[in-house]
Amino acid sequence: MTAPFGRRLCEVSESRVSGGYRLFSLLDRDGPQPLPGQFYMLASERHWEQSGQRPYLPRALSVAEMRPAAGGVQLDFLIEGIGPGTDRLCELEPGENVWLNGPLGNSFTTPRELHQLLRSAEGEVDAVRPVGAILVGGGIGIAPLALLRRTFAAKNIPTRVLLGFRDAAHSGGLDDLFSCCEVRLASDDGHAGHRGFVTDLLAAMLAGDDAGSAAVYSCGPPQMLEAVGAMCVEAGVACELAMESPMACGYGACFGCAVPKPGGGYLRLCVDGPVVRPDQVELAHA
Amino acid sequence: MPDFCGIELEHPVINASGTFDAIAARRIYGDALLADFPFSAFVSKTITLESRTGNEPQRIWETPAGMINSIGLPNKGLGGFLAEDLPQLAQLPVPLIVSVMATNHENFARLVSELGSRDEVAAIELNVSCPNVHSGLIVGEQPGETESLLESLRPLSGKPLIVKLTPNVAAPAEVAAAAEQGGADAVSLINTLKASAIDPATGEPGIRAGQGGLSGPAVRPVAVAQVRAVAAAVSIPIVGMGGISSGADGLEFLRAGASLVAVGTESFRDPRAGSRVAGAIAAALQTGQGGAPIGNPA
Image (cartoon, rainbow over all chains, first blue to last red):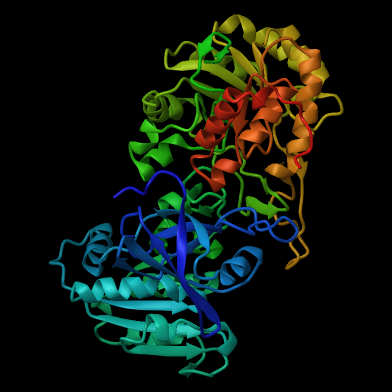
C-alpha cells in the first residue's frame, strides 16, 4: 500500500498528558492504515518556525496506535518535548491542523518470517517452529511497540513486553498504550519495576529455555538498541530494531538519515528502515 | 510554455539537484508520482565516474529557517547509474537533466560524452563546486578554471550544458560570464552557502564534517542578489534557486532575471512543493500580478 503523494492537513482530535510524555491523535482522512514500525513526518500548520525560525523541518514520529474512525484512520502519536519541533507538537490542541506525510518506511515482520530469515541465513533448513515475540522498549521508543503488540495479539502470536525508563519524569504512555496487557518494567531510578536496565530483563528471558523460539523487537535509545542487538546476535535469536536518525524529508530525498552498513556504505533509514536487523547495520554506531 | 535551451517545459519549476529522489519517491508514493510529477524537468542527484558512499553521519543540521547538509555525493557511479537508474528515470513524464561532478577534465569528459550520447538525457548540469586535483582550486570559484573546463567539454556533446554556480565567491557574475564564454548553454544558482553550527550539547560542530552547505529560506535574499548580478552579466538562461518555498518566492527569482526556478529544500517539507510553486506562479502571472512592482509585502 503506497502513501498518498504529498503532505496533507489533518485535524488534531485529542491531545493529553501521558505520564511524562504527551499523546495526541490525528484524523487522517486520506491515508491507508499504517503498519507497525512505520512513521510519519509531522509539522504543525501554524507556528512552526515560531521561535528563532525553528523548527523548520518536519519531525519523524512512529505511529503508536491507529484505529479506523468515522471518515478515516485515527493515528496516535506519543511524544516527548526535547527541542523546538517536539516542543511545538506537545503544545498541539484539538482542532489545530498538522501537516502529515506518510505512512513512510518499512514495518516489523512476524516472528515466524524473522525466524525463517535468520535460519536460512545460517544455512539451516530445519522445520520452522511457531515462535513468540519479546518486545523491548526504552523511553519514548515504546511508541511503535504498542501497535506491534496489538497486531501480534490479533495474529495470536504470544507476546511478552519489557519496557524501561530513565526516571518518573522520562516515562509515560503506559496507561494509554499498554493498559491491556502484562508489562514488565525496569527503571534506572527504581521508581517502577526492576531497578536497572530493561536489557537486564531481556537477558534473563534469553537465558530461559524457550529463548530459541522467540523473536525480539526493540525500539529505544541507541545504546539500548546496540545492547539488544548484541545480546540477540550472541544468543542466536531473531531480532528487529526500529532505529532513529536525523531526517529532513522521510522519503529518500535528503540522504541525511545515513546509518553505516557492516560492509561499508550506508543505509537510508527512511526508505531502507526504520526497522532493521542487527546484521544490516554497524551497531557500534547505532 | 517555457523553452529552456531548446527543451520545451510545461512550467518554469524544476528541482534542485540532490533534493528529490524520484526513484525512492516512486517506491513510496507509487504511480501517483508520475501522474502528478511536481517538476517540469527532473535534475538527478550528482553522479561521479566511480561510486561514492557519502559522508559519515551526522550529515544534516536544522538551522534558523533552513538546514546545513554535508551528504558527500553518495551515488552508484556512472556505470551503476546507466544500468540501474537511467531506465527508471526515463519513465518520468518530464525531460531528464543529469548532474555530474569530477575532479579532473578527463573524468568530466567521460561523464559528459557518455551521458550526452544517451537519448534519455535532455541536458547535463556540471557541478563545479569541487577541486580540480591538478590545480587544487575549486573549479567553480575560478573564472579561468570554469572557462577552460567548458571549452574542453563543449565539443563532446550537443546536449545543453548547465553550469551550477557556487555562491561562495566574491563575484559569481565573473564565473558565470566565464562559463558563457566557454560555451555553457545556461547557468544555475545558487548552490549551498558554506556554513557551520555548533551542537550545544557537545560543543562540537553539529555536522560531522565540521561544515556543510546552508539551504532553505535563510539563503533566499543572498540567492536573489546573485541571480540579479549574474543576469546582468550573461545572456544565457538562468535557473534561479535558493530557499524557494512559495509562488511568491519563485516570482521573485523570475523578476530577478531567472528563466526557470528550482525548488530544493522545500521538497523535504512538502513532497509536492514543486507543483504548489508552479501553480501559484501560473496563477499570479495569469492575473497580472506577475508584472506588479516588487515591494515588501504589507
